[in-house]
Structure formats: C-alpha cells, structure tokens
Length: 166
Length: 148
Image (cartoon, rainbow over all chains, first blue to last red):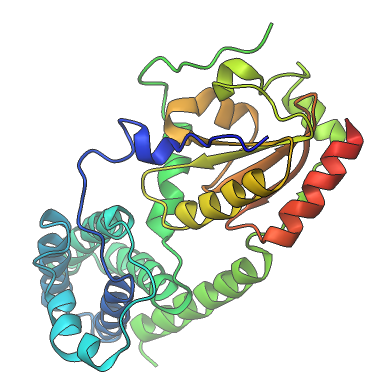
C-alpha cells in the first residue's frame, strides 16, 4: 500500500504561516562562521559594544527573514559567485528562528558587559558561541532543537486533537 | 590566558565533543525496549488511528514527528515517504509535534525529526532521531512486520 503521506509541516497551520522564498542553506552557515569569530573576539576582549553590534546583525537578519542579513549580503556578494549552485534550497524558518535566539543571547550579553556584570556576560556570550559554532561546524541548529523542549515543558496552550485510543 | 578566552576555548571544545557525538549517533535506528515502550504506552494501540488520522500499515507504520523550525525534517520526510511508496503495507505519517504535545510527552520525544517504527498492532519497535538512513528504515520495517 503506497500510503499517501500527509505532511504536517507543510499543511499544519502552525508550521508554515506564510510561504517563504527558499534559500541557499550555505548562506546561514557562512554567517554562523563569521558570528563564531566575532563571539570569540568578544569573549577574549570583553568588548561589550562588539557584542551589541552582533546583536544588531542578529536583529536585521531575524526581523527581515534573512533578507537584510549583513553576513548574508557578504555571502551573496563575495562567496556565492565562487561556489557551484546549491544542490537544494531550504526553508528559511529554522535559520530565522536561530537568529532570534542569537538576538536574545546577544542582547542580554551586551547589556551585561556594558553594565559590568562580567560573569553573566561571559555566560551568555559563551552560549551564543556554542550555538553559532555548532551551526557553522556541524550544520546543527541548537535553537531549533531546544524549541521542541521548551514547548514540551510549557503548559498546554491549546487543545490537541489527540485522544488515546479506547 | 585571560578568563574570557579560556571560556571561549572550553565552549568550543564542549561544542565539538557534542557535535561529533551527535554526528555519530544521528539518524541511527535503534530497537525500542518493549518494556519501556509498554510503560510509555500502556495502551497497546496508543498511536492508533485517532492520533495518526489514518489507518496503521499492514506491515509497519512510520510515524515522523516534525516541527516548524527543523531543516532535517524535510529530508526525513523524503526518505520515509519513499520507503512507504516502495514497500507494500507500509504507511508513513508526518505529525506536527507542537499540535501533538501530549503524544510527544507520552512517548518521550525530545527532538525533531524523530521517527517511530510501529508493528502492525501499533506497538513501537524502533525509533531514530535525526534523518534515518534508508537501509536502516527498511531493516526496521522488516523487524516490525515480523513482530506483528
């Protein structure tokens, strides 16, 4: 029986709110590599304003669905022309979500640096570094994985259509 | 060395260890412990028609849990849909984890994509986190069909 496969993420209302332009997946990964370097410099120097600048980069990418991503622009201008066309395009939703997660960490971290709360600042910068490095080196989206864990832990917000079979 | 740089190096080390471990185990299809499966799903047909929205496969059912922010879910869907198409009696369902949170909690699903292989009675016989490999899915389907 060749079962027709219902695809939850395609059809479910919560999964894809609006159709988006699919993207070259190497772009966000390139951006994550730059972010990794920036965050290493931030940690090594304790330079809060650099982390604030990175927060602005995250914000531009996140709120524009990556269209205004500064690192994405560098990728398109200088890197992509030298590479073969992408073998497949990807939904931008996961990397956009990752940019929002990065934004959260960078905002808290830069405030903490500028306020002189160095321990808090280092913790947040280090988490951002782990996430960016995992993305760049292993193509692993930490925020995306944590997303389900957060949802699992949260109290049920809407009735689910699941009932145990009698 | 200044403490910030030390933290950066430790973070990179920890992330590398995690990344390598994840890369090695990702997508591996593992047989489910029947006792654990029974404890999680005391009702044998927990994942029956109401949750799936369709009938179980005659030989095996592949239940995939996906979420909105999940790049590998699409690749998983391709692998599993192809198996369901190629093998008679195999059904494939792709559930949105967020709209099945009770099920996600009951089954101990921690990440997307997670694929469960069910025998013809709806009992879980194997599961994989990450994009499963086709040969392993086929092998797990064979085991599930024999179990039922």
